[in-house]
Structures are given as structure tokens and as C-alpha cells.
Image (tube, rainbow, N blue to C red; front, side):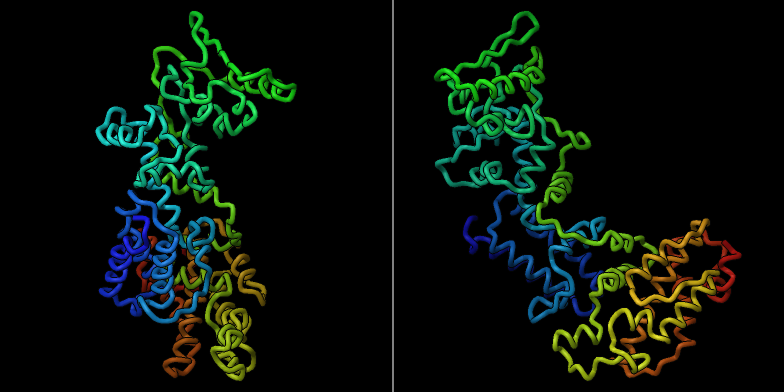
Amino acid sequence: MRKVSSWQCVIDKVQERLNTWKGTCMSRAGRVVLIKAVLQSLPIYYLSLFKMPAKVANEINKIQRRFLWNGQKQGRYQALVRWEVIQKPKKKGGLGVADCTLKNAALLFKWWWRFACEEGSLWKRIVTSIHEDDLTILPSTTRSRLPSPWSDIRKLATTETPVKKAFFQNARVCVGEGTKVKFWEDYWAGEAPLKQTFPDLYEVSSQQKERISNMGWFEGETWRWVLSWKRMLTQVESNAEQQLHNILQLHYPSRYTSDRLAWIHNGIFSVKNLYAQAVKQMDNEVTVDRLICSVWQKLAPPKVEFMVWLAVQDKLNTKDRLARRRAIPIEMNICTFCHSHNEDIHHLLLSCQYSWTIWRLIAEDLGKVVAHADDLRNFYASWINVRIANKTRKKIWITSFFATIWSLWMQRNEVIFKQQQLDWQALYHTIKWRVAMWTRAWEEDMPCSVEMLAQNFHAIPRLF
């Protein structure tokens, strides 16, 4: 499975599944759900056994990106947000779409865990006999003479990756009798093998392949370490030896217990947990404004939250953005509402005289006065940070932001693509109805109906 052609069946399966979907009829939020629930689950069996070539991972990512932004499996598309941002968890400002390469490594590291925990299992006996692995608690990292999936799994510990760091930071070798733990090579005293922590001492050690049980003996119930060297140590090496002894005073074998591998994060190993820890290890982490994370509050439909997520990042396809990308002539960069200003996102959805009138009326109905602003992100931050004691009323206040910005954007699109006439009074009432419907959806115990809430929108401050 090291050849790209061996993975063609996986790529074809992903593309065939797209043929059955009407991607262009779905919202982008719906496409994200299908990507996470279906497209990323199709190759799971292969990812759990074989190391995926980088070219295959890139091809699968390309299919997912095209489907997200274009809704089809072919054709050009315009990515509004970088894929690295989309792969971040929602709590870090992304969409939570998993990284194929990281998921592949996390699934393969599960075999490291099973190797340590499934003592005497048939598959482990076969693997150790074929690859001449020592009966230690962790697989050997030495290069195998036989190319096979197990050889790729063993190599995972030889390359510095986020998954490797996460695994060995959270997996702890609990030394019992020490018969299955290699003194220099295994991760048992710190976050790295002793041969990496003390490379000079490892080079002069005459016990490089020994296990802990052969590195000393018990005097009664007390363990005595015995380290031997190929030659006399230099002053620098003697100082390092003293540091090593300081570490060994905290780590030593114990009688009548077996060596085992423990997972220190939550106590239970899982691929999901390992993947989450690996994401935190990413060195090239994309910096995203924390304000974006507050979008996902489940107060509005997913497609609305997705649109606000784009808007707060200034990623919506306004005329100004399209003109800068040369998708439309510069002369067409005029506000759809007032026809007197360039249509950037801040003007269209906020500072335009018509848009601001809507914002002011909605805020007044909810008993608040908002200051005029020219930056959408700052306005969103000030809106959600308004102090409201009642929790339900606070949620309605935030929901009104989602309903207003969504309604303004939809009105703009209807004017452009359906040539509808602007009706600000109808838009104002539509926003109130949307707030009422969405509020009823997340607050089932609401004492009033959707109709009553919409018709008495101005009475919300007195009702809650």
C-alpha cells in the first residue's frame, strides 16, 4: 500500500459517494456535516492499517475542499478560508474537519497501545516472530528487513510528528519487574528515552540493549542500580552520570508487579483522545481570533452560524471582495442598498444607513441602545458582551444578532439575483419572526408561542 495506485480504490470510493449528493442544493454547513460524517469515515479501515502516502492525503483533502466550496466533485472553486483553519477544532476557531494525515497516524499508534496491552494475543505473536521483535512492552524502532505495514507502524516513533509527541507525553511505561522495558531505548523515565537524554553516556555504555531487570538487583526490597561502561568516564560524562542517578532515584522496578502501559490523560486510551492531544502539539498552529469561537452557540441554524463565522472573519463574497479578486469590474463595486458606497462587509451589513436603521430598531425593541460602529467584528464583540442578567433574555439578544445579519445578507442576495425590490418594513418583521422561531427551537419551555413572541417583540424586556 505504499504506491499511490494502491489507494486509487479509496479515492474512487470518495468520489463515487459525491455522485449521489446534490451538493449545490446544500448549504455549506450541511456540506461540512457530510464531510465529517461520511467522506472522512470512508477510508477509516485503510487508515487504521496502512500509512497513507502524502499524495493520497492531498488528493482526499482536495476533494473535500472542492465539495465544501463548490458543492461538486469537479470544477473550479474559490476557497474563502484556508484549509488549515478549517481543520482546527471549533474551540480554536475552525470547523473541526479532521486532518487525514494526523488521523492516519493516530489510528496506527493504536497498534502500539495494543502491542503493550494485549499480552499473548495471536496477532502479536505472529508479528514478533516475523519481524524478530523482542518481547518488550513497546515495539522495536529498529529498521525491519521486511517491508510491511508493521514496519511502517514501527517507524512512527522515529519521526517527530505531533501524534508521536502526544502519544509519548501521555503514555507512561509503569515499570514493574522491568523484564519487558529496555533501559536505554524505552520511554519510562521522562518524556524521552534515556539514550536521547544522555547520548554521550549511551555511546559508552556496555548495556545498550539491556532491560531494566538486568541493570541491577534487589537487596531485600531495595533496588540497586548497576551501570557499566566501556571505559573510564570523562569529567563531563561523570557529571551526566550523576544527573542520570538523580533520575533513577525516582524511577526503579518493584517486585511482584508486571510492566504495563498507562494513559495519563483521562486514564483511558482512545484514538479520538490521541488525535485531540496531537492537535494541541501542532507547531504550525494557525492563530485565530478567539472571538470567532463564540459563534458556535447553537442559538441559530448551522447555516446561519456558518455565515456569521465567515462574516466575522471578513470572508463573505461582497462586491468589494469580488472586485479585488477581479471577478467583477470595479465599477460594479457599489452598495446594493444605498448605491453610494463601496460594498465591503462592514458597510453592507453595518454602517450603511439602511442596515444601521435595522440594527437600531432591533436593539431598541430589546431595550438597549447600541453605539454606531464601522467594524463588524468589533460590533459583534460589543453586542455579545452586553450585560443582561436574565439568561433567556441574553440568549434572545445574541440570537437577534444572528437573525439580523443573516436577514440583511439574504436581502442583499435577493436584490442581486432575483431583482426583488427593497422592503425594509418587511425585512424588519422578518427578523423578529426569525428570532421568535429560533428562540422557540432552543427554548422548548417557552410560555408563549412563536406568533405571540414575534408580535410582542418589543415586550421581551418585560417578559423575561
